[in-house]
Image (cartoon, rainbow, N blue to C red; front, top):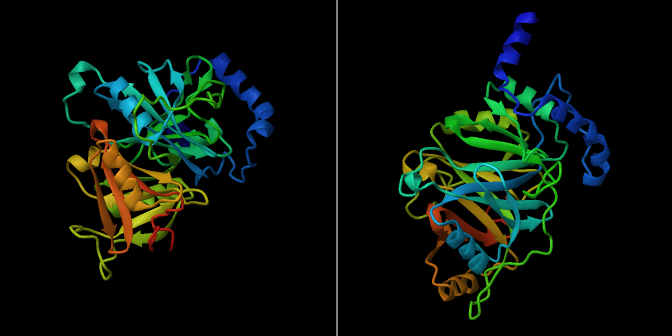
Length: 344
C-alpha cells in the first residue's frame, strides 16, 4: 500500500498554486456550489474514474495576426469578445454559447512561430459539473497522465491541464467557466456584441460549440483511453465499411463519443500528417439551411465546401484563419445520420 501511495504521488505533477491560496480557494467552493448549480458527484476521491464530463467548454489556438483573426470570427460567425485573460501572453476570449458556456481563447503567436508548422495537437477542454481538483488529479494519476493546475492571474483556477494520447494538450474546467474572471472563471461580459463594420453582411450566427474532430495515431488505444478517463460513450460510428461512405474517405470507421447528454460530441479519426495538428471545430447554427449558409459565406468572401457525408448529411467545411477547419451544422447535429445528422 505504501509503495502504491508513493507511485501515485509521483505521477501527480506540481500544482502551481501557493499553498495558502490553494487551500483557501477550496474553502470557498462550498459557498459557490449552489450558485453554480453543481451536481453532487457519486465519484469519490478513492475511486476517481471515470471523470464525469458534461460539455465541451472551449478550444484555444495561436494566431498569426490576432486582431485580424478576431475580426474574422466577429464578422463571419458573430462571435463577440466577452473576456480577456492576462495569462500566458494574453488571450482574447470569444463567446460561442452561454447555456452551457462555451468559448474560443485566441493568442498571438510569436514572430518565430507564425510560419512554422504546428508540432502539437490542438487544445480542447471539457466542462465538469462537480469540479474538484483533488479528484481530477487522482483520476489523471490513475491514467499515468502528466497534469497541472494553476491559479490564473492569482484569483481564477485555470482548470486542470494534462496530456492525452500522442501528447494531446487537454483540459478539464468547471462547467460554468466562460473564460473570464471570478474563482471559477465564470464572470464574463454577457452584454458583449460582435463588432461589425458598416456594409458588412449579416453573420452566419453561431449558437453552440457542437463538436471536435480529433486525429489519433492508434484509434483503438485512444478510444479505450478516452472511455476509461471519462464517462463518454460511443453512440454511433461514421463511415461504416459496409455502408455508403463520403466521397474520398478511406480509413477506419469513425467513433462518435457523446459528451454529456449531447448533441456535443468528440469524433476520433485515425491518421497522421498535417491534419493531425489542425484544429477541427464544429459550430451549431439555428435552423441550419446549407444553401442559405453557403450564400452568406460567399457574401463574406469566405471559401467553403458543401459535401454530403455518406451521401445523406450535408456538411459545410470552412477554411478559417490560422489553418483552423470550421464545420457548420444544425444545433441538433450529434454526428449521426439523416439530413441534420441528428439520428442514431
